[in-house]
Amino acid sequence: MFGRTIAIVGVMLALAAPPVRAAPPELPDRGEPRVEMFLQAFLQMTFWPSNSFNQIAENVPEVRKQGAVVRVRMEASGYEDFLHKLLREEAAAAGIEIVFLDDGDKSEDIFIEIHHYIDAKAPMMKNCNTLTDVGEHGQPRVHIHADPLGTIASLKRNSAGFFGCFNRETLRAFGLDYDHDHQSVLSDQYSTWTLTPIDRMSIHTLYDPRVKPGMHWLGAMAAARDVVVEKMIAEGAPPETADMGREWVGRFARYITAQAEAGNAQFQTQLGFAYTFGEAMDYLPMDVAAGYKWFRRAAEAGDAEAQAQVGDSLIQGRGVAADRAEGLRWLRMAAEKGNADAQRSLDTIETRPGTVPAPPAPGNDNRFQIIIVPRPARER
Image (cartoon, rainbow, N blue to C red; front, top):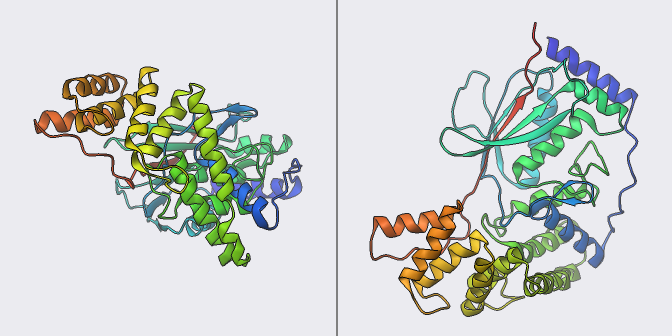
């Protein structure tokens, strides 16, 4: 009952004081500019998020998303109808199944758990934020802390408040992240209460099977282009839209190459993946020798992901003469830095001596467990 009262008060305040939002950059209504804005937003939301204005967060090296079914359990909060509608809308845009469990279902296989309380001691704190940890079975989890009193304060600051918070944090849980440059619920600058066309296109693109978990930047963006233009044509764009966006992906390939040549180790690693595994052969040819060269440069600069790939390449003789001892040295170096791929390769070799690690399989399911949890309950 208390939760429902807070919900009603929150809605009344929201209706009484709608936020004043900055004017967003206009989404072009057709043609190449529209395709390019969708691609740029997807790139930023998926790989190059911002964690605050004009500050770039750590880049994400590969596609991360949920599995095909998301299981949700909610405790009574007064916001169930809103959250059911929101999650169904996001799941429909993604093309995945969402299952809402009964309150009494205590299954451990939960990806989203939603409930909230009031933090009366700190009403001016953010109305929600996100923390991550690891569950008892080793699965990554995302905790979304929400506080309606914080929302009341946020209304005074002209932000989208509690409801915008859940739009934003559930999209982040599904695998997208902050993008302050486009009209999106993921933007603090262009704050919005509801999903925008860019949000819907981005989550649709992320969950298209052509954009596989584990894909790297160039391969994922080449696949994203195909998804975007196909979706636009299905929504009424002219057939010539099918060829749009290719120049954008070509420019992106040239940008990655330029950054790699300038000495950026993360871009060198990305270029190594593109050449070695042929993830975007319409834009860069498959060339395992060139891939090894870029992995080696990044590895020597200290990039653990590249060190793991150098180790595998040397053991397999992939793009370079085989050298098992040297390969093991690089794998151990990467494993000591916590690289999971290197550790898996070492485990395979130690368990079955004489074998070589298999190349990474595209489409490896990296789904997250997501739990939306409260701030501490008010002390009575």
